Image (cartoon, rainbow, N blue to C red; front, side, top):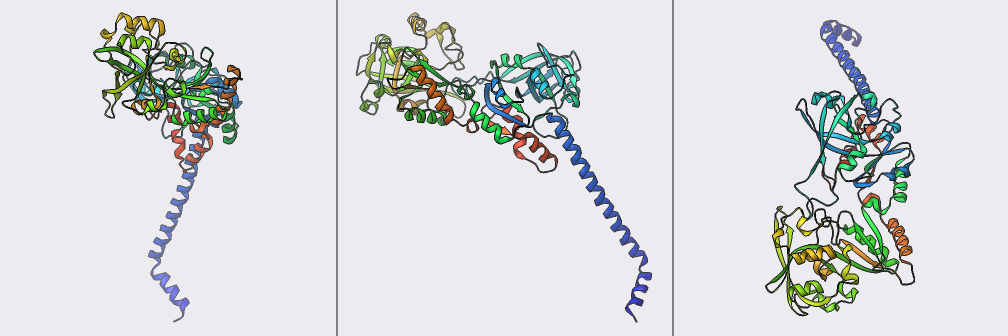
Length: 516
């Protein structure tokens, strides 16, 4: 039998089976083609949604802290804003929503996006997205309460951080519910589902967080990421890093300190390198609050103690840092109150936070190496960082620190000292010993004192030093980040998930790595 004859007979015999196979293949091809078309359509829809939510934003600069809102001027077409996550409650309906995107903006935000038909919220106004309005059952004229995390630069885990005061609240009235076309679903990170967002007045949020004329994010268009990073490095000032560089004319020194009360190890190392290159004398300091200073049966309650380079000041010899229990220098006021003389034993009680989150009192032993009058470096009240509830108090009796104090121990003579010298340290110990006792993961210094060369005017030395310091500090390693939100959003919409994109809002919303 011929092969062709066998083929024809086989086809006639199995025609039903062959027809079913052909039909199955046709259905499979149709399903795959349909899935491909749907996939293309979905990706196109996701792409359009990403572009609609970003508006004109191509890049975004975010920071873990707050910087001058004027920094936005360095990027041309840009607008500063505050981006945080918050909790929103509607008064009338009683409904609540958590993890809401809170944008503190002004008219610059809407001009940046070219939306003339939307007016920025002002006064007590707020604008909310349709998704948030639906969840809260809140429309125009509804009263809402917005709660966001406290923005204090002092870490909550430090002694002076307020662990019980983590939030600030703002009562606002919904002026308008924004649709998608009006950027009601503005979002810096690609996300599924609708966006729950609220737009609040920038000035109100700045006042609420005590961050006047500051922001934590900048929206930028047209510039590429490399240009944004270059401009950030060139334009950032010490203030944008939370640093202060001041000339203390009365002492003839340059002071370097931080709004967070601690200089991070990286920042301190950079500041010291720059000073040493300029042949300045560097005096590192670490100031801490002691619960008590004891000498025999006498004590002084609640005093600041500064760890400092004692030999650099000429107060003690280098050997005093290691001999015996350690050297301590008392000012003459403290020595008189303790009836202490050179060679006497002195102890200091102080609080530390344990890893379990409990306060524990520890004691360190010292021996008096010298007694100093309250003049010159011993009268430097700027050695003490600004501790809310302490340094801003008119009297010791008005102290309101975030840790327990017994103000009944405070004597009239202590109030007299405060009235005359404020928080000026009453005692000084070697810097190495102080860092052993009070150093933490946030750093081992609270300030630097820099002594320039004698033939240089102090203000000129300060200006030159600050300029050199800024050249040493890299914003991208000190809390700033630059995200290409448009490229990342488009990549995510096509199925190539970019993990960095999901952290943009979190980076701007958080301080010290936390979200509200």
